[in-house]
Length: 170
Image (cartoon, rainbow, N blue to C red):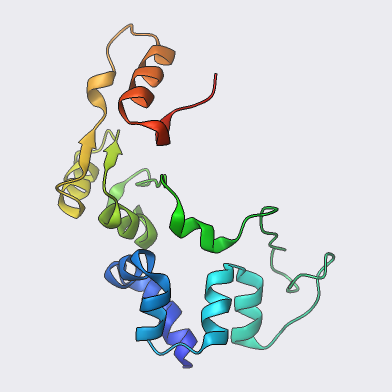
């Protein structure tokens, strides 16, 4: 296995490694011994390029991007680098329908890294897990909900109390 493969497999299976990567991508990649070309590849966030590099099956897609036969064609959003993800103010993750076995490694890493984790889940195991992963930042949103209360009012109050990162334009 190459250093890049070992690095990516480690991120996929170990939430602690992924959390360290999310917190400081450049430093963590350097610590893991990734070459500069591999660091650039990882930060690109382009799964087709990563796959092509790992398997040396590079082909050109319709827009001149990397594309692989039998795989989806990935296109980054315009004017947005994948590295921007590390500078976001709010990241939304899901716990899955059942938290046992369905919460992803990435969701776990983001929950651990977050300053605040406002959550609204109906699964007591998910509540316990979120509180364990981030005891200082876990903030239940159940207080905003009530029987016969208009949902729009609930969303407005929740967005207002959770700060500008949660606010929406009217």
